[in-house]
Length: 383
Image 1 (tube, rainbow, N blue to C red):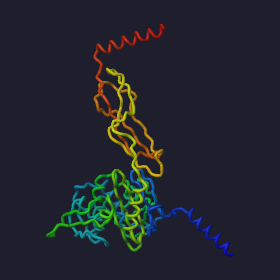
Image 2 (image 1 turned 90 degrees about the vertical axis):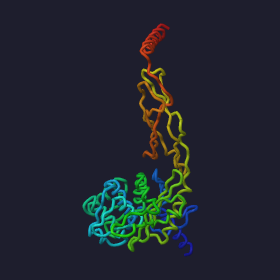
Image 3 (image 1 turned 180 degrees about the vertical axis):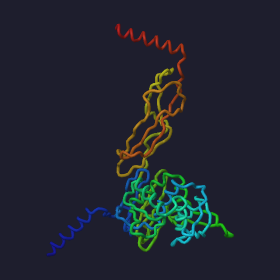
Image 4 (image 1 turned 30 degrees about the vertical axis):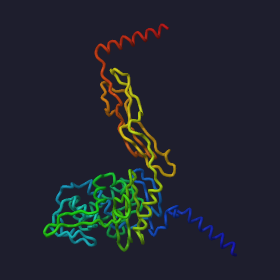
C-alpha cells in the first residue's frame, strides 16, 4: 500500500511539472507570494521567468500604464484639461481635482502615475475621447496592437469590473512598449513632481508611490495597484546600462519583496555582449563616376546585445544598402543601415556611413576611364 501511495505522489508531482504556467524557484530566485508573475528583458521581450503569466486577473491601478500610453499617443501635452463634475466625483485614489479645475494634460499624467489619481484618469479620458467608455476602447485596441491579446479595458483607473482584466504577460508587453517613448520613461521614473493646485495657497507635491525607484539599483518605474478583488499588484522596472528589466506581480502578499527578487533575478540572467564596434566595415558598395571604384560602409556606433541562456544565435543581421551609389560621396555620409533581429523581430537599427571620401571624376578623367576600359576589353579579347 505504501508503495502505491509513493507512486501516486510522484505521478501528481510529474503532472504538475507539465502543467502550463507551473514555475519552480530557480537558482537565486525565492518562492513568490504572487499568484501570477513574469520577468522579461524589455528590448527583446524574452521571458526570463514566469508563473501563471497568462491567467486573467484584475489589474487594479496597473491599468494606468495603458491609460498613460493612450493619452501620450492621442493627447496634446500642452492642452488644458478641464475637470468635469463626473471626473471630480470618481471613487478611489485621488488627485483631489475640483469640478471646473484646469490643469495641463502633462500635469494630469504625472498625477495619474505618481499618486494614482483616478479622478485625473477620467478627466483625461473625457478631454481626449469625450467619455471613459470611448477612451477605454482606444486602450483595448492599442493593447491588442501591442500584442496584449488577453486584456480588455472598460475604465481608465482599474476599478473592478468583470470585463476589465489583463495578465502578467500582457502587462509586461504593454510596459515594454511604453518604455520606447522617452516621455513615458520620464513620467514613470519621476520620484517627485510639483504641479499647480488652482485655488489653493500651495502647489501639489507629488511623491511617487512606487518604492522600486529607491529599493532597486536602476529602478525606473512603473505602477502600483490595489483593490480587494485584485490584491496587491505591481509592475516594476529597472535599467542597468542598456538592459531594461520589467517584472510584474499580480495578487501578491509581499509585492515589494517579490518584485525586487524578480528584477534582481532578471539581471542575473542577462549579459551584454558586443556585436559591433563603431567603425567596423560591414559592406563595400560601387561608386559610379567616382575617382575610386567603391567605398566601404562602416557602422557609426557600438552595438551590444542582451544575451541569456546561450541564445546568441537568435540574433541575426540584415544589411540594407544599395549595390551602387553616385559620386561624390562625403566621409560619414549615410548610405544604408544594418538591422539587428531577435527571433525575426527587429531589435535595433543602426546607420551605415561611408568610411572615406570619393570625389567625382573630372570630364578628362571620365573620358580617360572610358578609353582605358575600351583598350582593356580589346586586349582581353585578342589574348
